[in-house]
Image (tube, rainbow, N blue to C red; front, side, top):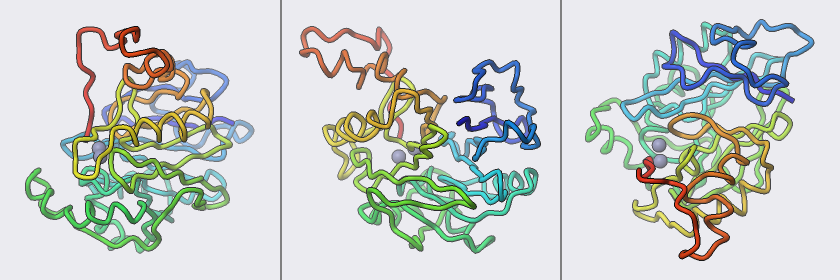
Length: 278
Ligand SMILES: [Zn+2]
Ligand SMILES: [Zn+2]
């Protein structure tokens, strides 16, 4: 099944303008001005828009169940008024706030949105509590003074299921970038929101406290890859990709890089060092 994902001109700097997972990957059929009011026969179970937030341009995602128009905001790092306006613009009722991990740029606006809407906070895994506790301090450092900490209504763990309207997402614990990082996977749509685990052409940083490079590689190869090459993912920063494309060409985790000995591994990165995000 397709997931209709598009950016909206007034909301975002478009990162791409294609609808992934559908019959046509061509942007011409799905201009960025596409609205949720698509023909009923083609309506996918979920739709999503990206709204990059904070100076770190974190990919906050608003995803919704098309049957009920109930929405979840994944990783509301900040710019809360913009996110609230997007909900209104698309006629959505916020049902859930989902958090991949406790970093400021992903979770800094969480408390404010809960205050405004009452929607419960689900995630991340409890091992990220120490990051959530640091949000106010990091907010001050990064020039986001209204960022607040919070306590999730529900901590998440590997194998958990979270519901949204009449559909559901699977939760997979993917530590390495942070110890409590989780990702959200919609199996039917072949869609995942992976936060800072994996990017198009890069992987998350592991130089923070309790980061672990090998653990991150294991999360990617043992937990993400088995979901399928056809899975399209929204990373925490930058453009979307698919697991299959990353297995072919990601300079950190492509099959040919991890499978070959260090001496033989091709230099897929070329001359530039891919950026690894916080
Ligand atoms: Zn992060
Ligand atoms: Zn990030």
